[in-house]
Image (cartoon, rainbow, N blue to C red; front, top):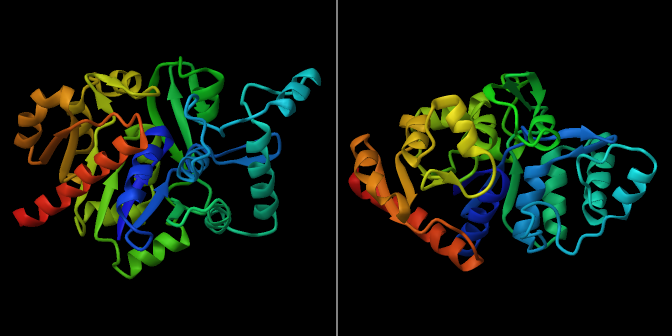
Length: 315
């Protein structure tokens, strides 16, 4: 089974491509939960929902988050009452948060709830939170330490980032379904989706048992660069890269992941960097990585999976 590590729009789009190529018994999608938080008394899991909505074909393609054909009566009424409206919750989206919160309070795990939602939405592939336990990303900025959503949504990523802290990560374990795959040695490869390396993928790596699997090089790892021609397709990845490592090109991402990654997929606009990536000891595939349609996402998935065959042939 191939495991895809995902978070946010880039992760959801590549997951959409991968499910077109690999059957449910060949692919599992592990999603970042560092963005999760409690808001208005509700348990919110933004990255899980983005992946889930995208795979179900009900995502808001224009916004990149939330559901299509959304209405906003709840937010309009909340604003009228003087409530907090900085984090937008659509009416259709709200039902997911309400039911998730109810089931968590009843003792169900986040992974079981997610599996139930996916089944109801017609998603056949396994979508798993990285952990069922509490894990929260804290952003260290020039104005102090901030909750992730305070930094990302309320402050629109404006404070300069000085570092990140993943609260409770050391005690977190992979969710039950992922733990079973690791224990049974069923994982044959890992794809790191073109998600923000610091905000979406680093919280997953912070889970000790999962990072040990990767760092021990028990399975090959292939990554897709989230940076194209020095810019992120969406989100603050290039800004954060400048602030933390002083560069914002595909090579900077390659250097950040280092030996954790065996093969890289980079965009055709960065073809000039391919030789330097190879010189650093990685296999490279150059292709179009902009997933502007499900068809393009599928082709990127095909190109990404082809690298596993090249890695196998090189051994």
